[in-house]
Image (cartoon, rainbow, N blue to C red; front, side):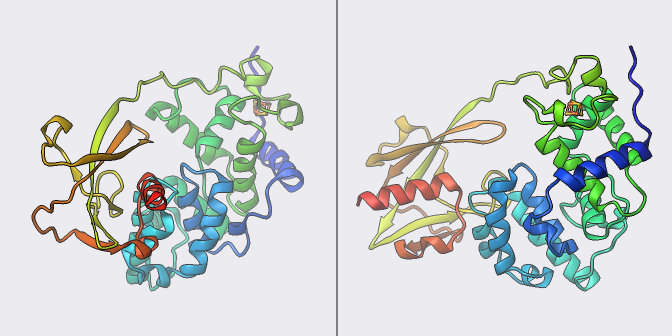
Amino acid sequence: MATKSLTPEQFQKLLLSWQHQHGRHDLPWQQTPSPYRVLVSEVMLQQTQVMTVIPYFERWMASFPTIEALANATEDKVMNHWQGLGYYSRARNLRKAAIYIHETWGNEFPSDLKTLQEIPGVGRYTAGAIASFAFNTFGPIVDGNVKRLFCRYFGIEGVPGTSAVDKQLWNTAETYTPIINNRQFAQGLLDMGATLCKPKAPDCHACPFTTTCNAYQTNRVSELPTPKPKKVIPTKSGHFLWIESCGKLLLEKRADDGIWGALWCFPQIDIEPEKMDDLVKLQGSFKHTFSHYKLDGNVWFIDKLGEDNPQQQWIPFNSLDDFGMPKPIRTFIEKHLSNV
Ligand code: SF4
């Protein structure tokens, strides 16, 4: 039996009523939602849970309260504020975005979707979020939560993330998004996806859409969205050098691209352990999981220096907090220094 979906107007009305009663209204970035605050929160929320983001957001806003403050901050200071959140290219892109907005528009954000996407790192979703939350105007948004809600409600089959399915999801968002006063509707979509139409055990009995939800009516809630085929993540080894002298540690700023870009790390070497005759001993190991592979990190103690490298710097133990580092590297250093 085919399930008839609500019209956009009916859908909006029901969602707004649910949002009014049950949605989230007190997140820090919802207070005075300037375009800058929306941009920072949205970039932080990509890949990261709300509760993790809140303290980072507040610390960020205390240090970089305006676009201008962020545009004028050093890359090291910016990266330091991001450490622990992962996916560090987000921090670099935020700083680039601030510099672009500062230099191109004198710190003023445009409000139309197309121009917003000229900002480095701002794609269709983030542009829609800024238009919706900061300007309260038309801005379709399709993130992971909205994809799940739409796939279930409209009975959309196929793996989200593939171009045909995403096209369908964005078309649906454009049709169902209000032309004006979109702030609460957009928040309602995100909140319903995050708190009610959850990945596992969605709370259908509390949902206002049960009578017209395709997945619910056809008993396919656990089948939609269509899951991605499982892929095995490979494990790679990485070898790093612990070089210390007189209360200082030699660290290297990594290149902008690649993993842990622009963060401070132990110098990394490519050679295999069996060829490392000169190395004194294994200092310790750590493990870290990236989205596309797992890293088995080995840290080798060495008292010999190689060539001068302008990317490397001797950092006193008591200044290590001032440098942005990947979380596993900081944890490793802290653990080792506390045992000395
Ligand atoms: S009825 Fe259940 S599956 Fe359908 S939209 Fe509501 S929470 Fe999601």
